[in-house]
Image 1 (cartoon, helix red, strand yellow):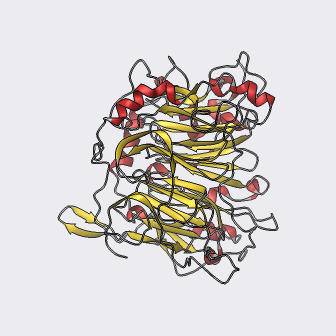
Image 2 (image 1 turned 120 degrees about the horizontal axis):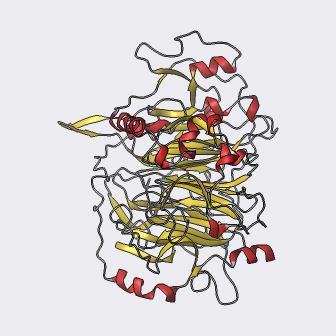
Image 3 (image 1 turned 90 degrees about the horizontal axis):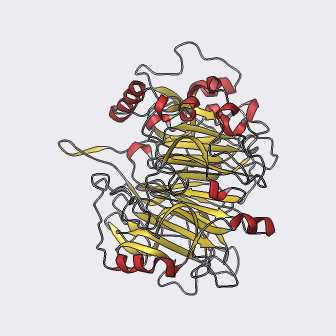
Length: 593
């Protein structure tokens, strides 16, 4: 058994990452993921889960009035661009019946709309014709969402999946939209093209090429950012309200559609949303629970006995305070922290604001269920190592600070800086439900948190040895509700976790879970430029540029509209089942902020 090192090595490849490739004793906390499920210590796993689930977490940090930034403000390479991936063909593994995940199991005999391996979605009947296929430039789903969005190279957006709260912006609610359907903005003159999309559990946000964001769906916590917390749901896309953004003639030229704050990226959690503008500034709206807004508080208040409310936000507001632990600040300045130092009398970590916080520019952001991870933009000199910031819920240590505690401000991850990252700096990151992954310039991936129900959590960012030790250069990463994916430059894709609906992509008759990275055989030799993991499904962008790509794609199955015609007819008579996943959906009471 050998580990694949080239996209031309399809023949005779092993199904699993070879155990001999990595010495488990050298892998520390990562060893849990590389161990077989049968060897997991049940007692340890249970005690860890109980502790994580039952602990009521205070804010991890106590801000200090002293600021720290030894290097001073940075000169960034601007403007920040929309998400970039090599355009390709759209594929999905998992189910097209978005009413099922989280509510019932997949059938033992997969139907035509249930994919147990990556399958090309409608390359001719929707995204092309008999002779040509329209390439996809961007894909979006999230760990808590059962709906998805794909954007073509010419800027058209298509949505499909669960639509019980009008999250697809089609003007109506329905249990499922089974086929990718073109999305548009009502009332706008001319056709708006799109560059990015973000989806939460109940909502969707599209970013237009005009720099304006549009939202639709559930708005219980103000996550749509339409500056109206009293509206709990909308079924058509509406323009988002962004602090400081002026739409119209801004004096920048003759274009009447100029905007002074141009939005280029978006990411959504369960009930929270974040935007990044072309200057790299951060804007958030929605639920303030866990400190998700990054404004230093939750605004928690008592509604009635045993019921709490939060001071949620209904408008995208800029967040410009970034912090680091006092210990990290001291270490960066060349000092040392005394034993027992760096914490206050209650045991909370002392943090200090970064002096350059107001000037920090972010290059990318990703939201899990209830936490964010963001990577700083590169500088013009190229000598400053981009910093990684996390905030929100600290369940299972998914923020990477070594503790299970919430962070109310974007906090610098001290473990991802220093000499070892000088020439191999972080370039992007993704957040799963309760885990985070960071990818570096040389294609190494660092993991923290937990994405499987069994085993212990990884409390600090740890290198995925199974990939790095075998010289895999990872170019795309994804994390879902219980899944993790890594795709390499050599045409290798691996996944691990739990996927009862086939979202791991192993194929018919294969296991629905894996404790260690396992090859997605159908994608062997396929160059995957982007992965997006949702609930009950996973999306891929697969390169189709040359003859070698075409050869690799021959073994990837495809589905067209006629193949699932019976399923589409069944869906038409299916009633919306909104609220069936209660009590997962929080009934927060919004309070103006």
